[in-house]
Image 1 (cartoon, rainbow over the protein chains, first blue to last red):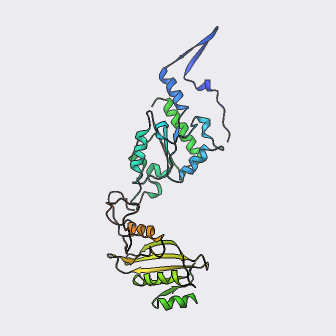
Image 2: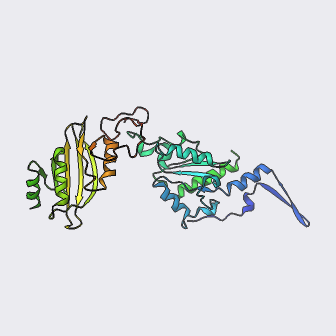
Image 3: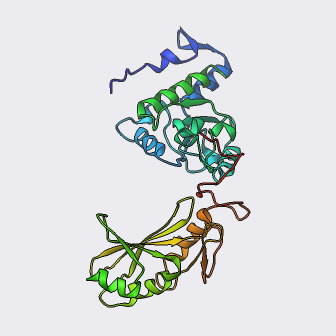
Length: 169
Length: 148
């Protein structure tokens, strides 16, 4: 995959004015915090079905989401910033998902990955056990289409989430 | 020759042709007697029950048992017809094949088949207070289910 390497100074929200013996940095604290946050979003290890396989692929060497700051997947919600709902949420799982979300520290973000997490997907009709969209349980920031979405689609969603964080929304 | 042997145990059994595995259709009342023979007869020796499932035909239920023998390397499918859907009863075989204990609980949970002599017949996947049996064809759930 062809990825442009970006000079981090180009995306830094502020101006550097060089002066003899150092420099002066002009910025807003909120912007700096959001910039830092967006480049260090740690996902929670959470996968309930086949989307999780694509998520693992996104984390692995070929797609390597560490390049964008999703460095380490955390096995505890208390250390995670973003939860990627990778898979079907059944009625029995819904309270568990809610608890995981509640245990995450603020600020926290949610990505609904794939058809099941956005709408119930193939289980929308004639199913007694599936939640028709994870947004019935917790608020969702970014939705990804696909069944399952390709790793590129998940990366695009995560980069969209970064843009959202940087914009301070 | 196995077919003749099985017919001597269950004279009313009907065999199906051109199926992946030899298949015999029996009535639920004969199941316990047949199961014991399938396990204990030396030339049958079906010691491995690898699938227990149920089919709802709207008019009746059918319990389907897939059995194989690790000794003789042969496989058979037994379909036991339960004529009364509203009062579905069949004998448990948990003390012949231990795996049946959980498989029968699953069939009870989703299809409402009652297994007589089962030691612990309660819901497996669904919550204890669940009403109805969701894999039955006439199951209705106006809250969680969107009908197509």
